[in-house]
Image 1: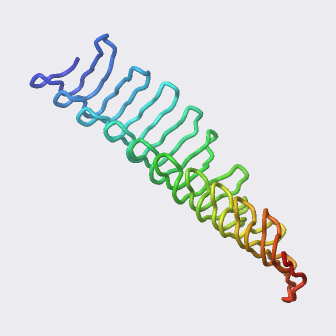
Image 2: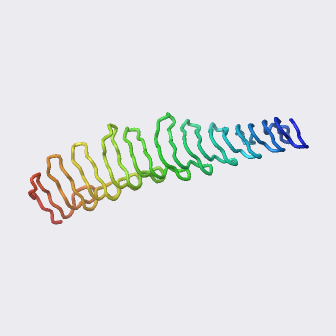
Image 3: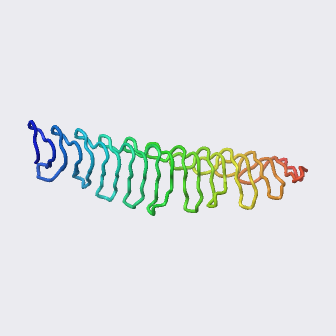
Length: 238
């Protein structure tokens, strides 16, 4: 129902299914949906926004029956460009999309509206360089793979002090790094799955330090304990 030109839909009009259910209402050009319009899907969701040559292209809004909603840029029916996606629990993503997935720079918020991640995304996953924000108030700043701390990065406490800086794997210190303990001790060395393991140095707040081997988070194997003045206090041979 609507305007025609040379036998084709042109201008404002409506399109119905064979069962006379409204399918589309909006602009047409040369018989195709083109311009502003609203499209209804059999599954219960709908799209309203821009069309180009029959495709969902340009800025628009897609609303699903389960409460999910996306508002932003589309390219031939998929999310492409800048936009905001909101889940049914009110958690949301704001940022760039590519090929219908979160891809590029973006921010993820939880259901309470609190920022939980800000940074790079690849194929729908938080991957690249970014910041993770934890409920404790601590912040991770560095490389992320699949939403986990992996690669080089640093963990900051709620008051902005560095807790750990170095290499990570699957959300745990792994490789080489430095941990700053609240009591004033500082460990620099090798880590395996979140535990001090391998060669390292523990500087104690009294000025003394231990340099040598660690295993399972504790001193184990060869090493020596050295005083603040540089005198060897104790030597461990195994």
